[in-house]
Length: 262
Image 1 (cartoon, rainbow, N blue to C red):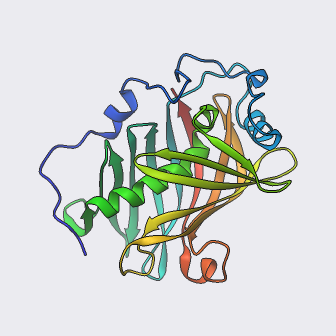
Image 2: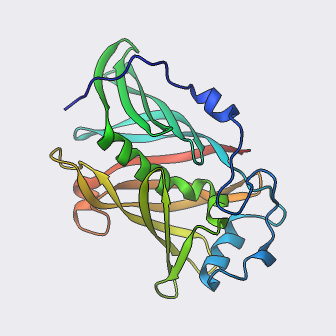
């Protein structure tokens, strides 16, 4: 199942964070301040979400750095973890984490940067337990970043986002990022706060061939950092919206302790 990884030295999390900001669509992120009055072209439900997520005159960021902790399901058991992630829009993301099995630390990293995706987990940081790379890993990573755009709400200010109101509480955002089409369904409360995110993501949740399957996130708490209000306590997994989500698909629960934007 694992594929051979290249010997090229990949960009580090710190260098991805320090990389130059980029533009998204018609918006030069990092140089524009958010103004709700500029949202006249988007549907009312999208305006409600963006006004909830971004404070007036907040600089539109192109990157977020997240510090988190939680539990991750490996096999049929849950293990606690601590982690850090950088998402830099139009470049990619790097997530690194430490978990423990029988008291021994396991160091892991998921990444998709400039179209190259890979995953590594090593016992004591030395002995490989899992590693994979290639097109399927990159496509799955693209889906991950697209769903995690709710941690970087400024990307939804782009004119390249096509919004559709599905009903009084659900909104669909259609766009293409990291080479993959995205169709995110956001479920909002009356104030515009995100309650759920659902999408079709490329992956192999049952261990066979890669294919599109339903992936989703439940937001159980929110918090505000640097003018951005985001989900801070989430549950995520495959088979979202079915009975299989809790029994088979859910594999990630985390709390965001800190978020920084630039």
